[in-house]
Image (cartoon, rainbow, N blue to C red; front, top):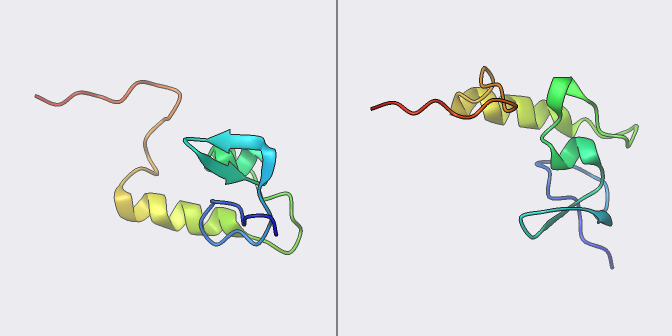
Length: 73
């Protein structure tokens, strides 16, 4: 049986095409943590909302992942 996508609360199965850090994902959107609020390709899954909530709790929602993290002395 295929593994479930590693994206939080995703209902889709992971595919070999989308691997990151040893984890399998169902799509590029899930593997990249839904940049620009890209939805999960599975129509009955809204795992992107779980990622946004997780990032807000961690303070990462305002971080621009295309830029290097700021180093605070």
